[in-house]
Amino acid sequence: MKIDLNIEPLGSWIKAKSEPLLIAGPCSAETEDQLVTTAHLLANTGKVTALRAGIWKPRTRPGEFEGIGSIGLQWLKRAKEETGLPTTVEVATAKHVEEALKSGVDILWVGARSTVNPFTVQEIADALRGVDVPVMVKNPVNPDLSLWIGALERINGAGIKKLAAIHRGFSSHEKSAFRNEPMWDMAINLKTHAPNLPIICDPSHICGNRELLGYVAQKALDLDMQGLMMESHLDPSVAWTDAKQQVTPAALADIIDRLTLRKPEVKGEAKDILGELRSQIDKIDDVVFQKMGERMQIVEKIGNYKKDNGITILQVNRWDEILNKRVAFAKALKLSPEFAEKLLELIHSESIRKQTEIMNKEQNQPEEKLTHA
Image (cartoon, rainbow, N blue to C red):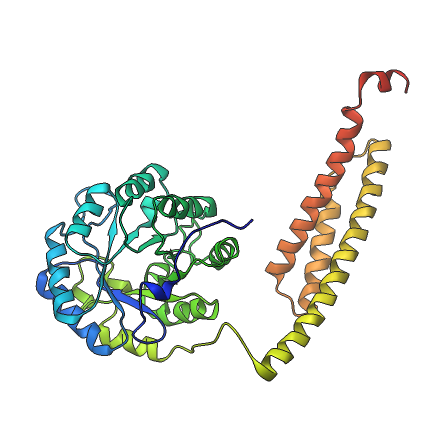
């Protein structure tokens, strides 16, 4: 389902100094010297389009560093005056919005902890009403696409047309190499729902460590995301927050230099070749769905037989047999076991639904039909 967002193209409100579009800066503004020096180093790379810095930091527990506060806005202002870099900060309350705009911040962003709360997002949206300022909305902490879309709709509904999403990964109970699981399918689904919405990736918060930044940044660009937001500190070893995921401006420039840029559209011979290959895929997809339809017809026959003979819908042994045989077959065909399992689970779920529907039809017959049976 497409969502109708009335927004302006990304290029109309932020001009990339180089490719890819890069927003960078320290996780937190700590001191005036730290912020301004970092800003100069980033500007000197020639790769950074906008300067980011955390002024107000939402922390899990009280007593942790919660940001330098409003004074940091003046440091950002100085950094902008000296480097020419537009500035962007996170806002979580109406007061944050008011102070940031009063200090001349160029771009605002709504953080993951705010996106998860519609009341907070609405408060921010109300404070933005009547203001012409770009706003970026990070995905919620938990993997909930509706919350992300809802936050974007609330901000857009307040009249903000310069709008973008930020993909920063999602919280997960499973331990992995990432601080926040990328769950790329969530970002892809958002793009499917809102094709005109720019999505910027935040590899720093996805990774939680500097070693994986290049890998995640490349993946984001390969998925046609429109830019990157990355954390950079003049000396990450002494950073007050998120030291492990920050890199020096020089290291950041090196990461960017190593990225491969690919075009979302192709022309000429390449387009003809891709067109032919996609045509082959379309034909195979048609066959797959035709066979799936035939399979479900057999499932209905099985459901009717089970109903007539008092047999339970779920046959655990049969399901285990299918799972083991098909996954082994998939591996032989060079398909990943994870993909095979997910596909089989979807098919199995639909089969159970159809058989349950058949069972319920008998139970829901009108009384007069039951009388004459």
